[in-house]
Length: 515
Length: 123
Image (tube, rainbow over the protein chains, first blue to last red):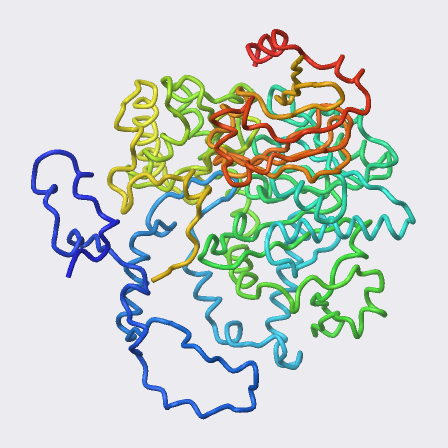
């Protein structure tokens, strides 16, 4: 028997001398457990469960499998241990700060989980008779009412399953509205400071994307935008607050200008957590905006749970929103508006994007978060998110270049560049150094408008003590990068794997296991 | 054989009615390790400033724009197998595509080597 995974732990990575240099027989290092691939543990000749011999299925004809499927046979305990061991090599929001800018990883309150697991919510089926799921339909409707109230909009489509799906929903509403007007407008304007999914959504929906430049202070160039407006413009897609972490102060002027030429305004509301309770997008003239429930309303994210991207709509676009949705009737009952009754209730809908009503488990969690905070608490969410991001920005701007530090306070995220690092040192080295310090790195090389961008979003759920420790770690790495510490070039040194060859991984990816 | 440059960091070598297009050494340096290149199909009609090719590095995916109007006569198939050529020899073996020129006067608006050098010095 040899090491469990010879390619894994490397004894030499702990430096010269000392007991830490001694290789173990298994490759494990006490509680830091190595783990092979599942195919390397289980034999394809054994099975972990006792099934009866399958009855011959002659009627399958050509569909009958002739060769063994080759799945490894593992017992239940081996299987559980395999995945638990792998999970211990992972990093999670429940282990520490997850400062990804533009992706917002924040604490998932356990109260949300408790409510989501109540049988009346957790054990319902989307095909159950509607009179037996009135409570679940009421939750969807109640959350919808809150989202409309918080955004100052007219309607909301609850079914989109993620932020980008919500973008598509909003753009399809714009497309349907233009078709109803009998107009063939092909161009969607997307500023440089928008999320990367915005141009992708516009192109996917069949529009031509045109860039709008940003100003030196990191906001949309209003003059450039106005100069491009015309009868061929279907609308704009603006991320506000934008990916430079700044609030687009000219939003109302942008909306007015776009409306004046007959276009619509889509706002990427992924960063709504910075303004919830403070600003109502409806007051800024926005026609459609998706809300990532995980970003603003604390539902799980990034492998922890599915996304959910409800889209709030203006009076102009609401008639075109998708089915199904949960409607409340005068007698207090709830009913789904679907194909059968849309003709009477919602005749101009562009159609259906999802099989069922949306991410029920996320709806219950988001509504729990909203109700447990209340209106005043949600306002404080935005204030604390902005305060924390500014604390990061001002604590580090003396060691890391902050290109928009002079543009005023940032919103929910702080943006730094790689200017001033020693020759040969890059943003990637700082990110890798953070792994050694026990943090998931921040978002790097995005947004593209900033060279070697580092985008840090602390969120409102972190304490000052946590932020101080992170600032201390990032400051020490920044200084190492400025002073050209050669050890930083090969970081991480203490992770389950040393620095990976990302270029080789992208050029020659190995995507399947072969014996 | 004159070589011209665009503000989007493409270079174009003109040889009679046919031109070769690639991205500059400065561009590949900014992009970092190139992991994927998509070149246009032969026969594709390109218009000046429009999308012509896609280049993807470990940091970002970027469009490569057509420096002039014309028709693609050949894409550099080698880049599919070996995108690293764009890093190692961006202004030689790492060329992206060849094209005909519909309107040679469009070259007048492009930069020569010295002008491009001054241009990137200011970035």
